[in-house]
Image (cartoon, rainbow, N blue to C red; front, top):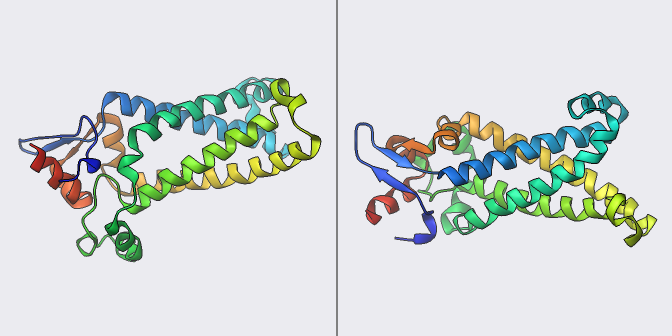
Length: 221
């Protein structure tokens, strides 16, 4: 059994049906703070990105407030995601079976999970999202600090700020795209969203989608 496949709070409860604790209350709160922050950051950032999207500032009290609030939402996102990172980074380390899973992505899309290798708490797709967002959020906060003139303006040159604006915008577009993929996958795999709201999944769900994780949990108990 690999302890790296199990998070604190993961547990199996016998019954009809069998239920499995997948996320603690703390992990769920951490996740939803991150999710809400990301949505607000995307909306406020898009409002500032192009005049055609300026109407989005209505959700933040107008253009001036949007410009003021946007970087602070970024700070909340960074520290909230940092909490998720420390909770889950070990569970997202790449395993041998992840390469095989990724190579059979057509079977994933077709729903032929019986042809896929058994995976731990997270599959290769989820791990790619995790590590992508880890890198993207780090780049966003770094470039964001460079262009946050109110507090850091004197420390950077005009050229550095121009480069940072470009990097920030491109990174934001990629991050939004990754987020869309993440949400789509959560909706596509029934039971995934429920796991992040109630904290539990059925034994059948765990057996179908994360069999190695379930085996380790059963062996633990």
